[in-house]
Length: 466
Image (cartoon, rainbow, N blue to C red; front, side):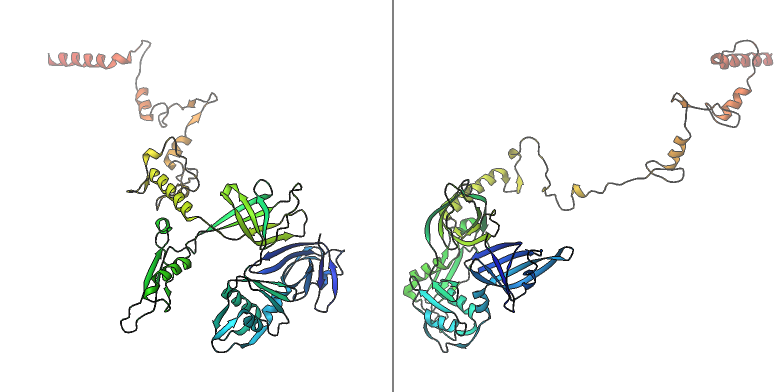
């Protein structure tokens, strides 16, 4: 495990313990540390030395502390999270160059580096292979050294690396290796990110303009094969007076070169050491063989970022540079996808074809419903219990009726006998009528009573008519 040394602004130096370090090394952003230190009895002498703009020394390099965040952990103990930037980026980011190159003139890369590093205390070395010759530059300077270095990098499409107090400039700082990274062998957690946010499929170019007629000496256009898949996406046009009527072919080639019609794919993975193969010395900038069968990838890729850890049990994480997707494969693959979709969707209605559905349909959590209808948001009314004065699951009048029902010990409904004043098995009025019927010891057949009374009435009527 690498040691971690702290130096405060008073130049006091001590070793830290009980820490966790993540080191990031990126082509475009240099090196940085994310550190967590826990305050313990073992580092009671060194923990107080941690302060902003102080230094950390890790793996033989100095880093400047830029951010600290303290959190209490137990009792009076603290934990601090630290972000630190490599010393060279800190120095060059704070050194301001006030002079400029003056009027427009040709400058070589060495001329621009002399200006960019003036007063910084840093020297440089240029590896000229692949770098351009010179540029017409006006008023180069008047900025921070780090920003001026980045301007030079952009002009020459180059890279630079700071080691100690020296800046190395080259077309590409890299090694072409035979190292192999392969899934199911020395890789875990691979991921693939596809980015089409900057893709364009159409661009126009214009040459020198005739001030009298307002017409251009030459006009050209270029349409990417991907336009058949993604449609027309316009890029910013090119205007260049150096193109005349005889340069139409040159202008078209430039348009093809400048159009960003490539699909960028970024690969990240965790490298796992295989004891039988030994640890491969893979560094930032290296080209290595990358074989990832799940992504149908077998090519040499460049390592643009390496993340390592002080914990020896954690494997490094590599991020690779952009892969340019093959246009022919992409259009063919998307064409097959469109064919499959046409079998499922009726293009005239935009709805799923009935023939594409078989068996039961399961509605999942991601189902989309028409506007105004969502069964997951239906309001189901709730009711309380009813009583003699308030409606609930039933009306109050029905509640009163049910409440009057009496059950006997056998669970059967028990109904009281009627009286002259109270309803029961019959109404009180019917009970009063029955009470008026008087009979002797003879048996009275009530079913024939009305017929007998009618016969008696007929006899009485006949006797009265005599």
